[in-house]
Image (cartoon, rainbow, N blue to C red; front, side, top):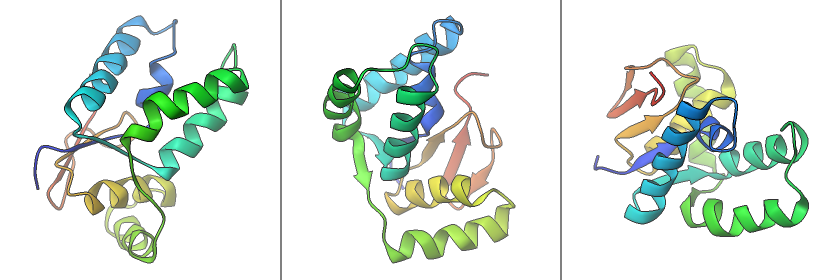
Length: 140
């Protein structure tokens, strides 16, 4: 493992949340660090989830032009994990081992596939260690 880190979808969602200013500031900081250092990683799943939420479920949904710009400038540079057989097989094993949902397990499998040492997520158990991956809730 190394100092690469994986950002779960909720990090990107909070970066737009004006009702949770502390979380927004922390999320923006993590995204900035990810982009600047080149050590931040996301998967196709994070891209899909964020684009779905941001264009449909935000109080003020992103317009298509803004979503496309964010995809190009922020998400695409961090996007390193694409679907493959190993991801899905590891997802099933992680789901069985941890009891996480299939989609949460896929986030873990994606982070592990890139040898990330940290997974930043509000959704998973803060402090949990899965193989060499440490889950950290950046908002606590």
